[in-house]
Length: 106
Image (cartoon, rainbow, N blue to C red; front, side, top):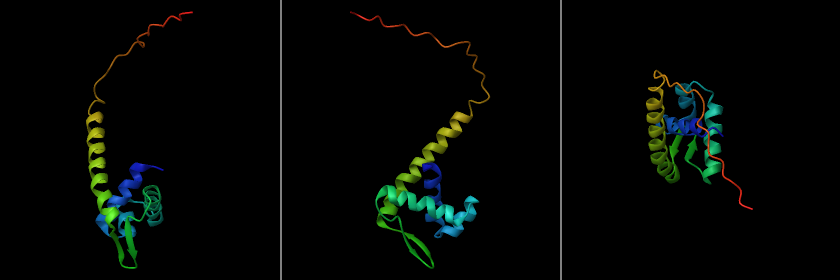
């Protein structure tokens, strides 16, 4: 499972209140969003949303997970932004530094 995409789908669905609106925001099919959320629910051992014909609302488990998931995604986004700022720097690596070999003692 692509955890990043699944968590993004979960967070977007929790904000949007429906799989179809979340799918439009993520530019994927609603079935893809639903599949990601179902995979997370299976991994976490229970429902993250209460579903109805009007949309979805977070369960207690979903609300708790949302806080952790949001912080994790924010941290990952920050890490990616920081790392991408190093792209312009050129590092000249000629060859790897050799490791010392350990001698076997008989």
